[in-house]
Length: 149
Image (tube, rainbow, N blue to C red):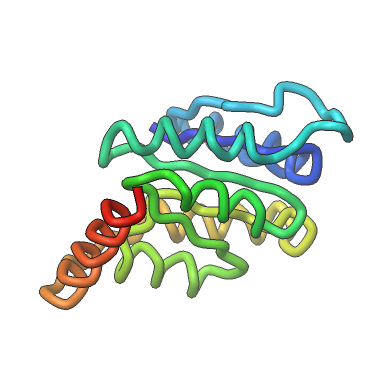
């Protein structure tokens, strides 16, 4: 399952991604914003996505705001979530392959709908390579998560 969340800055791009996911029959849940509202704030939507993703290793999330940074920060505050701001396909692929990211943060003011779809598609289809080094590093991240609670 893919969970999506965006504030007003990422709302239109989120809506476009939903259309593309639906056309390809990829299951998703929209965690908000439900409407375009210039007064909304990104933390609630990014948190809703992160909490949903943290419930299962098979879940993924897409969060959007103008820069991608705010929603990324929020997502990364949730244990078991590894989020990345992805501005291109290379970053998306590397984040999945090496770091097993389960949330991708998109900067809606920096990427077009076409670019965003290419980024999401690359991220969705790239497999975590699970090398000894990658596993060791992820275990270190988990220890850091537990130490900061």
